[in-house]
Length: 380
Image (tube, rainbow, N blue to C red; front, side, top):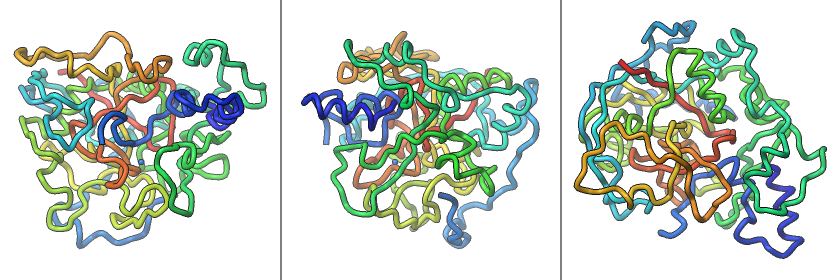
């Protein structure tokens, strides 16, 4: 939070590492290569011929009913291999391990702007990004002795993707993320933007407590990481690299909304989108669930532990795992993170390969950003 302010503080004090981008990482963790191993508006580009694999269905935006599973897909329970042993993956995804989950319902799509508006209209809810930060809470996630910023810096804001127009190193996230006052779910690119023409896009700038509040209102909950990954794999023991198979673009067809070109400055938009896409723009998986990969990172209910998978007994089958009891990332010890899954429209081949079911990253629990959203699940 206030990452530009704090970045300057750290530079001036001569300790630009390891907390040079702590505030960015507190409020958002962009797609990035693994630390220890080797992420505006819909385009009018016509994809009708490229998407011959499926026919786009009409969107559903009915009023939420806590007693209903309308707009949800049933996922029969089963056993599957979670994570991966693929060497072309990130360390936090390895090793693969056996997991079994009970059956559950999952939202057919990511929660849309219109669906979230219905929730806000019904409850008067105000999101984290719309509130002035409380220094005492922020201070808990900062190194001891971090000075308080001036009150004019502690304003309601959120992180917005703001790419440069020229090629840059991908080692400094602050070069393409802007802490923008007035940016929130209603104004994704800042106070001058709105949701006109984007009511069927996934809602963004959503923090964990915002997603939880919506889920509770809807009579649902956030998925566990295991439930999310099982659904992304089509509800079976599909160990393919991608949710749809071994090839990123089968027969040249784009299967998800990701970043084409050289990240972050040159998005060629070959898939037709420069930012979020309307839900159901791409083919559903075997279960009939849309956009589990790409579009926006999706929040889960699991705390993020960088070494979680390495500590799992490979001889066991985990039953309905809910993850660790607390967040743990020694490289960013002050940040409290949740697992997000699926990658987003900012995942690119030259910077991020997180558009895979096993991919996972930690995102600060009180963060919001222009490429983080969610969907809900419901037990039987």
